[in-house]
Length: 330
Image (spheres, one colour):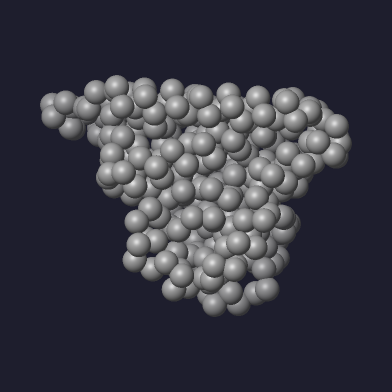
């Protein structure tokens, strides 16, 4: 599949944005600058970026608790994302959602949730809305290997297939559900094999390769827009950091070896993508270096923006919890 340079460079830019963003979050979290939860997406950037570049702005995505990468991959504002993590008023949810709840309906980001697999039926519902309203958009949802065992995930995949909804199920198989290896909880060889039970394509993809993710998602999008129903994509990937910040101080090395982490780090998705750009003469080293530097400055500016943003006032506590006016009962 021929992919224009603009999209290939956009993939690199968004992967570097995610990488810089997450490295910054780790740094400021470790220094005690903010509290709460944060789940780094480092090592998995190619999954969300490759998939989201294959979507339109009008298409929807929903994510999971490893939630910074998904909105940035869809084109989200890193300033608003950082401010939200800091609990500031200029954040995506006015500082009330925190790290695991970033939403931007203007570019199709339905949001993420810390409840495992809960976003799967949300994205499926959005796909149902598209079909009922005869709208030309598809919905994609990112969930982990642990979430693939949840009932909500299977219910959504079944209904998505029965009703031939324009939804794409993307399983980010990063090998562990917190500290539990997926092979100890999944009876089939691959999670993608489960697609057969729901009469939909099951595609196994190298999740460290943004181009492979783009190609697989592009085919799934074509199928969805044509009214032929959903696709299950299993992206084999790996989180380079711990499940969440702070967990490493408690369980480091108790469930995975240093050698395993080192071996996976050799397959850094950004390095793989840059190598392909250079080998195909799509980009020069100078162009690649410029993107790395520009995105680093963008994240630095986002950090300063978050630090300067005010906290919400106590009087705002219950704002945005209910609609301004009750919806009339039909």
